[in-house]
Image (cartoon, rainbow, N blue to C red; front, side, top):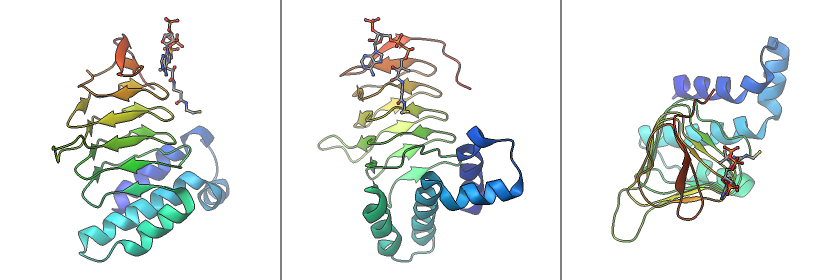
Length: 173
Ligand SMILES: CC(C)(COP(=O)(O)OP(=O)(O)OC[C@H]1O[C@@H](n2cnc3c(N)ncnc32)[C@H](O)[C@@H]1OP(=O)(O)O)[C@@H](O)C(=O)NCCC(=O)NCCS
């Protein structure tokens, strides 16, 4: 858990780097993204150690209106620039180094317990959604308020409802 959290902190501070230790500590104490991710990682620490998650999940909900199933999987280097209104259903898998903006929903479709799978480096823009047992390929971008309902290939930008590919072979920094 601590390795994952360390990678999360590095990615969330990347816009402020390079900076000294004092500024890093100040950022960690003030950035909402770091606070929300700390609560998320603590929730998963409780799951791993078979402890009740209610304390951290309630704080996460009260402060950030974020709900994350204990049965979801989230890789290291998670970036949440505006941590608000995010819902992640059971059996959702999020790869390493993903960016999840405000109001993103990763949810199940009726009758299928498997949630969306996000490859490494996926960018879910503000209000973007993924529904059902679909895969969003590595490094792809789902645009603002777009809804992915079918598999999205790797390295593309997809927008609209339902999300359609508008650019291929994109390179994300
Ligand atoms: C998806 C995105 C990356 C596309 O950016 P882009 O590659 O520069 O694409 P463009 O702006 O040139 O748009 C290309 C086409 O897609 C359309 N489009 C872009 N984003 C769209 C969206 N979210 N929903 C529907 N259509 C969209 C444009 O209207 C345009 O259509 P046209 O060719 O008919 O004129 C960008 O629109 C986006 O959503 N970025 C995420 C922003 C975000 O979440 N920021 C976080 C908060 S700060």
